[in-house]
Length: 460
Image (cartoon, rainbow, N blue to C red; front, top):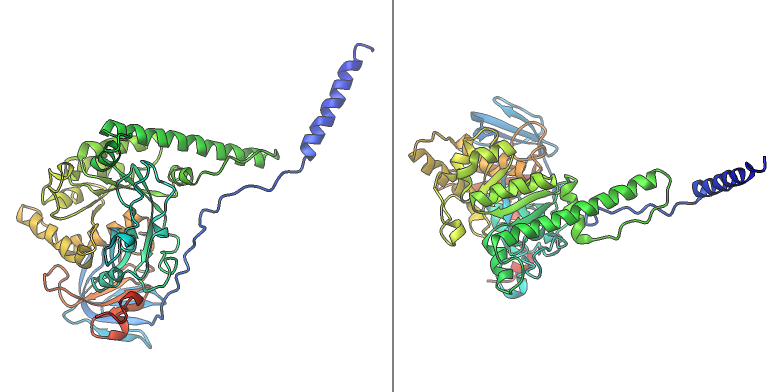
């Protein structure tokens, strides 16, 4: 009996300690606010609108002639023939073409606004190879007159990206192209953030020139891998904290790291990758990099050599955002073909996008897409307007993770609509009326719908 006594004591102590641990009060749960700058976008005044007898490009590869488009409460209600709606504003679409609103997945409006002066240049945080902690939205100047110019070109949605000097340039933000005094008034509700990454010459030139890493392409890859390895550890630390807390323990929360928050968001599938990357072998490595760290490699921007690996991009579900005829301005942009977009588009599960990365060509992305269509058809493709419009509407929406909301004139989607005076792939094409969520935001013939930024007021 005496020999049992110590054990009983130990059991009693153990029970007491266990009881003490179980009854220990937990500190308040530490959580991260993933949306500290939420959208305040409010739809402008809408009205039920019926466009009659137009040529309609749906945005999903379909074309309808002599067709009507009805939108109600900001959503596409019907597309067909002989439609009617009580109380609708009826627009005669005879001779006109109707498309979804144009989407540019690569813009620097607001962060490199007009006028282009040094004091306005806030789009490239060239201070470290990894600046995932910066957010482009914190540089956006909503009074940039460029937004209005793009609206006159039919652009209803655009992603604002930081620049490409760094391996990780920071977060991009998707905006609705509506007049607003604040960035948040333009912010596309519930659109995922993008993370800007950059391959190749830019990072190695900027930092190699300073005798810092990376100075080579292998240095670039090392930088990516080190950052993702750190992000994976950060993610595991938060997951362990959450699990321990759920189990009733009182763990200490990991130290908050704004830079790693963004990379963790990618690993969690909440933030999409947008990667400035020209060369085929580098895009292929970035696909493998995503597989190594278990995230999707997203959209390749500029993608001059995408045609060389078009099958790989389709198989991996990557979008490629490309120019029709910009190349040769540096070595990594040298090996282009004018059929680049068409070759990518021809592959199974493809997602070919035409982007601008320009404050000028964003104003006529329809004609940028037209250049691809005509050049490709001269060389044996058989592309139509119904095919080509996807490159600046539905495929662009897919790249931004908003294809369930916009990018095509399908029932239930946002009524982001452009009425063109003629075939939008003509050099004479002009957007006559533009709608965002069913609200008219531009009318070529009505100054009431030609917003000017405060910056332009009073200027010659």
